[in-house]
Length: 219
Figure 1: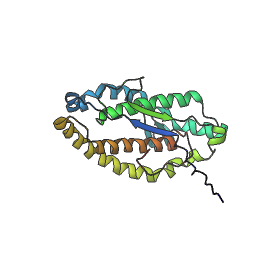
Figure 2 (figure 1 turned 45 degrees about the horizontal axis):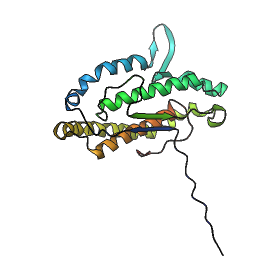
Figure 3 (figure 1 turned 45 degrees about the vertical axis):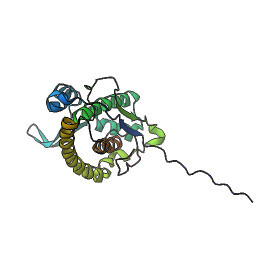
Figure 4 (figure 1 turned 135 degrees about the vertical axis):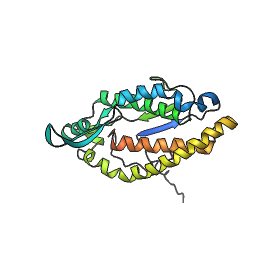
């Protein structure tokens, strides 16, 4: 008798992925002044995104007014598009993808993960990939209304991870100045935190997937 076994099914990768090439060479001088050197490109990113959150009473009108933008993309109009038309415009996705890539390049530079100055268009060594959703089959109409709430556990954990990342940044800063290298373990942790944040962003704010993000820094 012969027996056969089918290979285990490989779970599909999450539709939001991030990887950053480990820097073999670092620039100690720009690392020392990184908080200063990042300012010009951070201003550019800030002017593009222009995120706001307003919640308050206005003398000119009754009631409450809430305005939300995130990552340079208007969330509420996209929620309405999916809710009423089950449509995710491709140009909207392309804009979010390009802006996400730019933002993570700036973030990686500030966090000392990379040392070439962030480009506004070239990928460089920070690789962000998002999968364009088929809104008709991949997205449920009502999910955008509750994703922000479902993502709260992730946001709480990420808040603690961001605090830890501050200490990692300080340790890495000193390590780079004295050894000329970013400790690999700390590098992998920092990239993992960014990767986790990207998955939550893709789920709750970019709305490209209904798959709940895993609680992990791993790919």
